[in-house]
Length: 329
Image 1 (cartoon, one colour):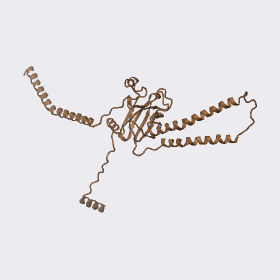
Image 2 (cartoon, one colour; image 1 turned 90 degrees about the vertical axis):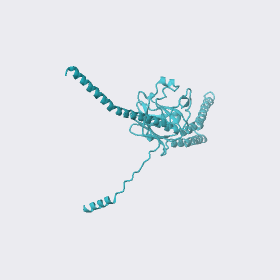
Image 3 (cartoon, one colour; image 1 turned 60 degrees about the vertical axis):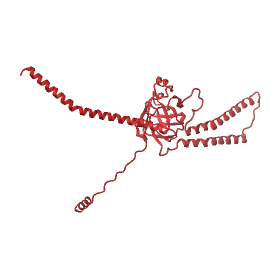
Image 4 (spheres, one colour; image 1 turned 135 degrees about the vertical axis):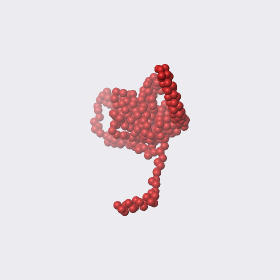
């Protein structure tokens, strides 16, 4: 047999082997392709079942600083509305009246008792009526202020109910992480949005973030805070909410938002070089939208049902054998 015959024979063997491998791999490839198609179809079905979610745009911004603002931001929480009412209806009128009265007294003393108008000063050392008046009136003023102040203080430290939704705001250097404890424990990392991207969407730069903290409206929220490295502070002025995030311990406070919208805040504790670049953006939505967002993040909605499995009863024969073994022992 010459070299040409040997080469021809090897080529025939290789061709036969390649054909056999092709026939062998074809069913496996088809099965793999079918499995992959099934997975894609399942994922598509899940995505189709999950409600669509779109974030609010700039037209829904409600809590943010305003140019030329001289007072508090508009309030969108029960405590905030009460605190703003107390400031506008009680504190400011009292402060204004006292300031005007003290200014009048100063001007009256300056002009009435100056040396040119009163060369011979009075020898009066005290006046009982005046002393009683300037003691009793301040006490009454303090009582008027104390009653709503104590009520507001108590409301700010009210414990959240058992069915409140728990969200942990973790402060990092220098960004926030929002952990949804009751919805599967997933965490959303929130960094400040680049200025160019924020301006392109007509959103406030240095306040907008890439991932907002999404919460439901008219629902008690148990906001827990934790400092992962140093002390931070989670504060949203338009919600009258501020709580420190301290390393080594968890603080918590109740928050209820009354209207849908976007509310901005910032870290309110000097936490390092980029302290001014870790803003807070809360997006309050309806419960349906909130649950759709949770599902889109891979979280869970509702409590998982616990199925109790009862142990099967022992067969009579097995029970008798167990008793006999115990007697023999």
